Image 1 (cartoon, rainbow, N blue to C red):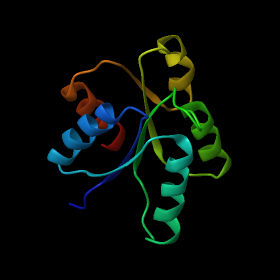
Image 2 (tube, rainbow, N blue to C red; image 1 turned 90 degrees about the vertical axis):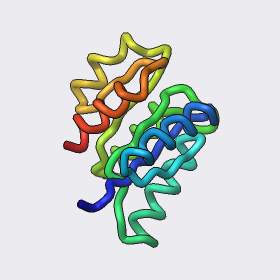
Image 3 (cartoon, rainbow, N blue to C red; image 1 turned 30 degrees about the horizontal axis):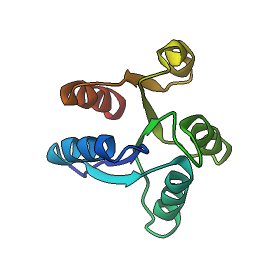
Image 4 (cartoon, one colour; image 1 turned 180 degrees about the vertical axis):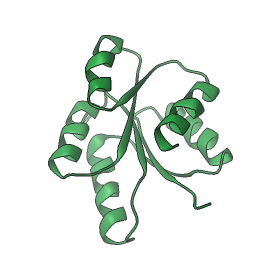
Length: 124
């Protein structure tokens, strides 16, 4: 089975690192970005230079430079067909709105096993 590639976008190094290590230990290829702008660059690089795609983006909503809301909007503008998982400690009231758009929501803090369940739910 081919490894799935996941992009983790969060401005907190510790969160990025925990998610990265958890997913890598379970066989996923993981790349990280610290804001939405960096994430868009990585998505573009994967498509153009590497000829590969990112299967899932896990993003926080509140970040400097470009936040998760802006990232999602830009991804839609550019027609990136990538599954999305939003992680946030502040926006649980937006969960129904996000989920009607096909975006899963995971409130912070979370257990690694809960993250893995969401990832498997999205990637099958």
